[in-house]
Length: 383
Image (cartoon, rainbow, N blue to C red; front, side, top):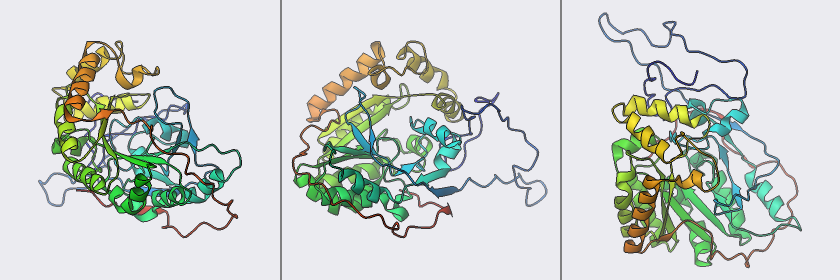
């Protein structure tokens, strides 16, 4: 079942409130309370203790290739790399959640607790860049899941990828909502000085309480703005993404986010309307019912007005912006704010220099470098 008669209670430190069924499975599972889900009360008359929060597990994934390619007309890059599958940030709106169904897992809590890491990503990348027919085009990091989610502190896969790209002069962009990107300024700044690197920081709201509920393990809004400043001070072109815009929930923050970003040194901006593909729709509706029950119906009503009466439409262009009067209003607000603040449009890769690329030497196959042991961990939490 994708929905319940009453919304599932929030899970501490997680975005999703339940695990929707995997759409590829014939059988369906229905939750049943047998009395074991909650610990017994410590003393007579006390309430039963909450069940323990689900822990994060990391599994090694051996990929055969590392560069993903697309020719979608509404995506501003043709090549991307995802060091991880699943994302511990737990953003309830994440359009990448349905990809976990391909791993025979749920796009719900599984997506943010059962993660997959690709420790041989740098080796695979070096081999692909060394192929005689490779054509250099900027590579986007963070197209699907965040390359700087908490497990990157231990696994350092994103850093190893940047080391390869910097070593052969290959341009790249990064999208993140994590302050961990500051760790790699030593690699990013020299590439930016050669017009081969840009970073985009996602800031969805300035409301700490809303951010805590919506993106429970991502950096706090103020901390992300500090990251924008740190990147800008290092000479790195940095933009801000007000994405996703959720009508009647965070759209009120649009101008304030852009103003704060410009004051912190951002030079570009972009926005995307909330996307609810496949299992994301029931997850988001139940999250609304659990956290904002008095506003839930209105939020979905306005969103459907922008989606032709549906929760989501997947057509190119419309999936990013929607249509109708409300979409036009947001677009106009965004344009006026960017013009006033000196922020240019979008997050495209124009101007990144591909002429400095020099293919690396083809690597000899060798054992992967030591990495943390996969297993259960309690994650570090950002500010």
